[in-house]
Length: 214
Image (cartoon, rainbow, N blue to C red; front, top):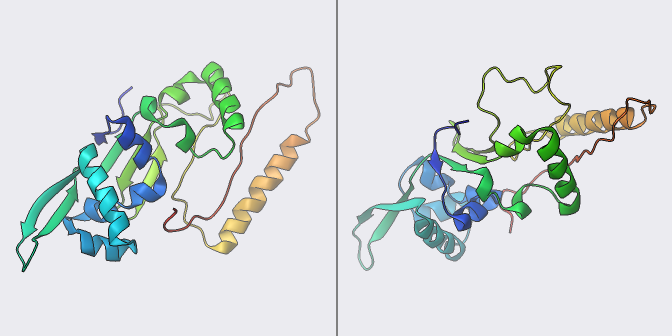
């Protein structure tokens, strides 16, 4: 299986940082075009001190470059640019505590079950961080790169393993989504047990996020 094209992160430290949505977001201005620290700080509404720390980290990770400098009185202004508009974090570098599960014990149970029932989902479980056409940041789990693969096909096991940090909903649609998820959960939770029934594990979570999370 080949991962989608993009810059493949090779450092565990870089993978841990970029798997945090609020850290990945700090790269956004630099993924769009060469940008100064001051301009990026203003666009992100983040202090210069905090952003400078992460810019230094990004440079050390090799995912940010200094493209050019502009002279001015005093110290010249540096313009930074990300080395790619899409980053791939391989599954083997995904930090266990940054995969979106608030309860690691339950996530551990789910992952252990998936490794038996659908190991191809675990093997494909890297993370893609990509700049969208509207300059928003998309973070998505990498699925099996096979156009003929249909996870809902009858010959496939009844498993799901995905998450998204970029579902944009107004409050009305968010409440509708919440209601439908809860109704489905309650409906199937109350199914009568038969001799063919198997025990399934499910994790559900839904919450709005802040533009910048500390």
